[in-house]
Amino acid sequence: MTEEKKTKKVQDENTKETKKQAKKENNKHVINIKVEGKEWEEALEKTFEKKNKNVTIDGFRKGKAPRSIYEKKYGKESLFFDAADEVLQDSFKQAMKENENLIPIVQPKVELKSIDENHVEFVFTIITQPEIKIKKYKGLKVTKEEKKVTKEEIEHEIGHLLERYAEVVVKENQVVENTNTAVIDFEGFKDGVAFDGGKGENYSLEIGSNTFIPGFEEQLIGMKSGEEKEIEVTFPEEYPAEDLKGQKVTFKVKVHEVKEKVNRELDKDFFEDLGMEGVDSKEKLESEIEASIKAQKDADAENTYIDTLLRKVGEQTEVDIPEELVEEEVDRMIARFEEQLKMQGVNLDMYYQFTKMTEKDLRNQMEKEAFEHVLYRMMMEEIIKLEKIEVTEEEVKNEKEELMKKYQMTEEDLTNAFGGLEMIKYDLEMRKVIDFLKEANK
Image: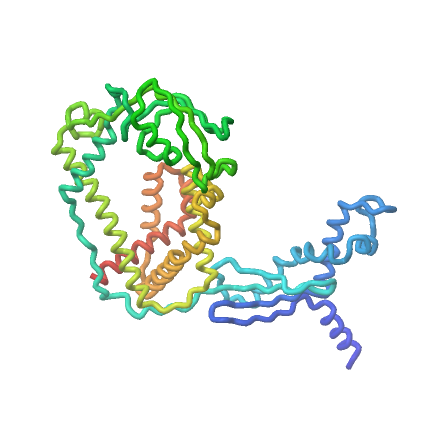
């Protein structure tokens, strides 16, 4: 071997920056990237220089200790993981460059396989679009159920309105009965000592609402205005306060006033209180309620129709959906659920506490629906390709302007809220697919 070739071989061995190995399992691609030689040494040195600036070692000014002394005190391994972070991004770019035909559909995963003073090895897992085959998506004979509104439903809703607008007035005989509202003072005692949170004054309690400890409201029945009484109850075993759960306590109660609901009539005063534009008679109210119930039933029927349609196509679809894709959808669902909770003044931790659930329980509960979301999305994307469904720039522009008008948003706000024009276009494509499936499966 010539000297030139020997030198070349030594350089290749000592400065080889990456060794790559990739294997595929269906649409899961596992890529190994090994960083060693010059690149790894430079990463270790760079990490040392950063860390050394913040440490003081006896006999040296801050940041001036040589690396050998630093490693003697803190160990060589103290540099490894930060150095791995230094080369991680470039390693991923290299992995994708060497496999440029791979297009991830979920966030790639990375694991640290091994690391020491001579090398670091990463394992990247890339999930790509799985193959999908839809055996049939036309002629499935799916129809929407026609909904009607019954007279009983209209009367039932009118009854709700009359109850909602019922007037609460002071009761003549001032005796507490079920459904009455008792205005009370109360204070709770355990073993003769008042406990925190057990006191209230001029509290309006609706009897039968079951908002107090079991047994409390029932014992108020029969009491009169001005009467005082001691009520004994037992806190439930699941009560959140540890010192009270399952404990017997005594409440001293005084009734100040007793009120009752007075049913309303369908008269002028009621219609004025109702405040529904153009509604000033029973006939007009019935018509308004019928239209409202019909609109809700039609919306529910439409949703059921679309769900049935997609489920029927799903039964004709063959695809191996990666669990990573389902997990990502669960993440999105939990994020949306968390936002809904925030609007009610509740966070996820409080929800878990109230429902006695864990995050794992919630994820398991959402998994089936998440799988369906992913399946239906992939189905519709495939049908877009098969049927060459297109959305024009003009349609996207018109939809953008409609959304800006509807939600009173600027273009920038709309982009932030909806994810840009591509997401608007995608949403329009999905709607066109649904319209196509409706026509193709009547």
